[in-house]
Image 1 (cartoon, rainbow, N blue to C red):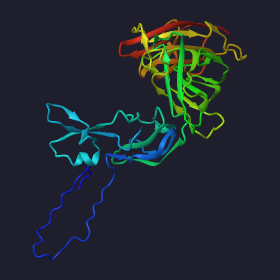
Image 2 (cartoon, one colour):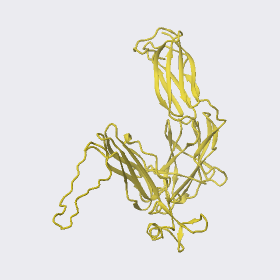
Image 3 (tube, rainbow, N blue to C red):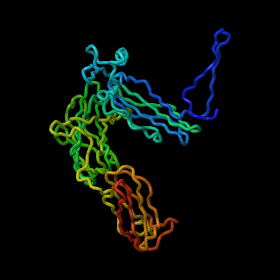
Length: 425
């Protein structure tokens, strides 16, 4: 038979009326890989709500094949909701004989009563976006302590290329860092690219067995301009900046344990937002127990005096501007090898964009392109590239004036910004 994808095979044989023969073995051999395959794990019971940490994996993908790994977490053993028709118009209910339907009772309903099965969005998170398998690890998707997790893997193959998932391994902390950590941020609408004062509010609820925490890490769209104050119940407290990185910062704070349960923790910092709907995620952990996981916070009503209840920040005064604040470290530089002002640093910000083509080129005054500094894709955020004064052949260009051009191709068309660069040596 010629190679082709086969799902079902129908085998026909002459009627065995006299019973003189029987099939002892039946074997079919194919070549290649199934075009599509899906694995969904059983729901895994972790015993009690626990803090969800890192997920590690080992995969192998042939060129042309793809693997999508996703997961979800929940509070009960069934991620589905079952519905029954009441036969009062289009009305449906989740109950039968006064009890919530489960799979076994749903299957016992008459077919005409069954109204369908939907995901349980009250007790379960939706499936996570696919993990980037090139990284070999990522955070388990869970915005609070969860007792149940489930994994799904989608394999896409060709006849000659397949994929393998060798193992999954994940980390949890039992008991959790905190039984609950509600968090919200204010303000929730800001001007794109403007340095803004934010207050991050966390209300922890701890029980007697919870680990407690003394550290917070908050994700940011770019390096924060400043971290100004930490407060407990409205009063300033001492804190330490453990690290400040391009997209995250970590603080050491007074220890939060059972004695401080339900005390409002606030962090004031200044940062920029470049993308509509940016989420300021955060994790809490105990620095004295480095092998325990960093627990994610849950968006909610941490402070009843503010009406935020979210960690998502939107933009106001949105226009079609895609490039913001293209700037040079110096209008002129001297690439003469003395270690002083040998490179030109070019910084820029992209606003409210998905992954779009970006090009940064250098031209002489006649319009001839002499160097490609960057050609690729980028999303909203702050970026930087450097130029060492050399052309595409890695030769120093003559002293003079040059035109730096940044070009972004978005849904609204091509947007560009230009600057004049002076090279002296």
